[in-house]
Each structure stands twice: as structure tokens, then as C-alpha cells.
Length: 167
Image 1 (cartoon, rainbow, N blue to C red):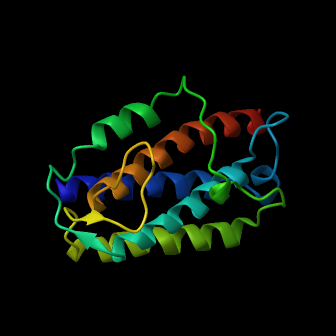
Image 2: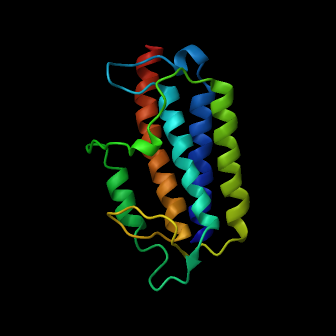
């Protein structure tokens, strides 16, 4: 189970980096429509949200349920593209232009940290330092799964944005 979740995370984040890498700085900062995020802002939002990975190293306890129990519910919610979601203020992207090189460097560093550190980590442990109110505490495995489907959701959004800016 752990290997599949980590492989899906790696595949998904590689796809994200590839899509963002394919854009020029100008394209990265082109707004597809009023009120929409630019491709750069989508990347910035994900970069900010990846800071949650720090909790994987925080306080944990032995999990008293299946360590992947919440993953299907998270997947169903985040991969339902008919639902409009609002971003928490803490991870809202900047309104300033995004520098492609800086964005990609930061994303790659955070992604690599997860890929390297989680290989030897007990992913079944429950993280206690932060929780999403609607779900309660996640296991390390569920946090990685959450980051994966959250990224997949925004890859869908990014593809729509790229279609518009390259049209």
C-alpha cells in the first residue's frame, strides 16, 4: 500500500512539474479569465500547500484504524470536478507575477523531500500537529494521498488554463 501511494504521488507531482515547465514566464502569468488563477498561481498554491508535509515529521501516535481509511473519501471529494472549492487563506496564491525558475525550484525541493523521507517512515502513524476540521487527523499515508489528489485536482485545472492560454 505504502509503495503504491508513494508511486502515485511521484507520478502526479512529476506530471505537475512537466506541465509547469512547458510554459514560458509569460504564459505562466497569463490569466485565462477574470477571477481565475493563472497557471503560475495554481503552481504557487500547490507549492504553499506542500508545506503541510512538515507535519509528517511532527508528533504522531499509533493509529487505531486502517491507515488508509479516509483516502477514498478524500479522493472522491477532490476528484469531483463539478464541485467548486475555496482555498484556505493560508495557501492562497500571491497576486504578484510568478517566476517560473523559483516556482519550479521550490516545488521540486518539497516533492523530493517527501519522496526521500517517506521511504523509511512508518506511514501508518497518525499525525497530531494539524488536521482538516471536516476529517480529523490524517495518517502520514493519508496526508500523502491528500497531497496527491489535491495535486491531481489542480492538474485538471492547469490543463484547462493551458488550453486557454495556448489557444
